[in-house]
Image (cartoon, rainbow, N blue to C red):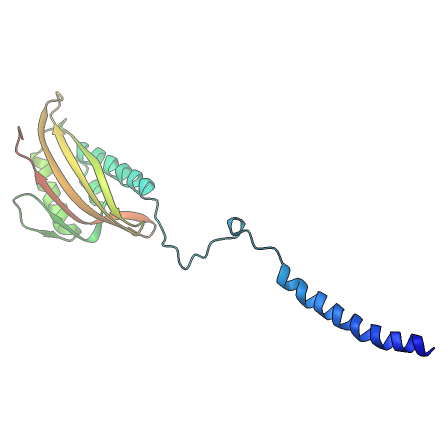
Length: 178
C-alpha cells in the first residue's frame, strides 16, 4: 500500500502538471490564420471610388443635357444645375444662381438656329463619387451635319439627394480651324 501511495502521490501531481501544460500549451500551437480568407482591416486601406462608373453616369447626364439643348427646352436644361450654380461662359459675365442661368439660356436659345445639334464628350473626371470635376469637349453642327463650332468645358458635379447636379461650369469656344 505504501508503494501505491508513493506512486499515487507522485503520479497525481505530475498528471495535473501535464494536464495544465497540455491545456495551456495547446493555445500556443494554433495554426496561423489564413489572411486571404479574413476581411481586410479597412481602417488602413483608402477607399477607391469606381470612377469608370461615375464617368459613365456623367456622360449619360451630358447626353441628356445635349438632348435638351437640341430640343431647345430651357426647363429641362436648367434642371442639370443646382440652385447655387455658377456658370462662366466665353466672353460673358459670371452667372450666379439658377435664375441668372435660366435668363441667359432663354436668350441664347432664342438666337440658336433650329436643327442645330450639340454634343458633349466627357474626356476625364477627377474626384470621388460625391464631388466630380469633369473636363470635356463640345461640338455644334448645323442641320445639314456641317461642323459649326467646337469648344471645351470644365464642370463640377455634386451628388445631392442621390443625383448629380452641376454646381460650377466654364465653357470656352475654340477658334475654327485650330
